Image (cartoon, rainbow, N blue to C red; front, top):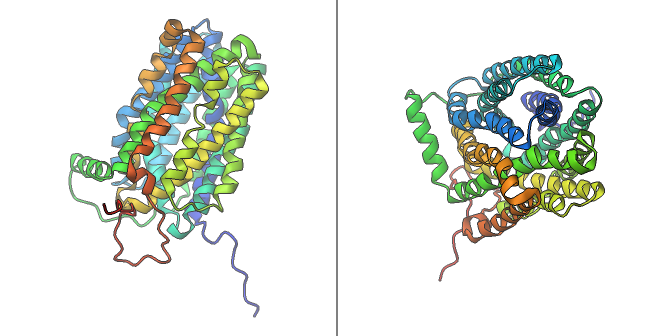
Length: 424
């Protein structure tokens, strides 16, 4: 009998393929939903400040519930948590879509339903992070995480373009309905995920699990230093993408369609760079990753300079390049350094810290634009992104965290791959 040819994607397990496909589907709806929500507020006579309040209403329960979601995901089957969270989010977006299509949506309804979506994400995200890291062999981490990010971010291209176009042509209600449908399809796909081999239960309380997760998170300085950096960065980026960007687009760039096109360019940058990261295995994981963070503030800079739409599109593309360079290296670092039984809890603390200032930042985005002017607020966001990207490199663990080759590592190798400081 002829020898069968090895499959090119033999490293991609069934769970990896299903989770990637479901992430692409849900991402198509999610990419357009923030655009639709922002223009639903503005179209209903709302102000820029109210756009910020609605965005903050989604982020607040995310911050409050992430560690609960992470603890549940390390105690219960992760695929079941993801299915339940997707169904909950589908229901919340469906109700919001009906209200917006009916033309009589109130601000308090937008706040409540946005908060429901944030709660669904808080339960989903730690389980998803743990599942994808558990499903990937460490020796193929760069390739697998790059493919996952390309799928995840590729949906930003179609989703943002479709969301912006549908919002401009059909109104925001249909975009929200599409988001609800995508959540439903993703839930069906994730229903077929196979339960992965789970670590033995600790037998302790949830409070004990939370403390163990915190010890695991706080014991690694490189981890909490980068997360502290992202607490401010995410607040600035959310303000730009959810509040200032739509406002500038509405004032001088042509509305939702133009902003959707700019967000699509961001998605193109994410995907194109994924092709590079699938082959590039930098030795200094976080040093290289943080060079990508320097590009995060370019869109705020372009908006502050009142750049024309083509330059804004280029700025969004560069921002997408930076996000993928950082994100792939960050996923490799977490998988390499964090014990498997702690994946979801550490992921939850990571997201909790990264999103901790986002509700405040988005809620204050409108008042900041009034106090500083829209241009002044954008300059402040751009400056913070640049300064924080430089400051985090002061920490030697961030500069020296080194990729381990699992093919050469012995079972008794130490967990930390941070290079020791040179002897004096």
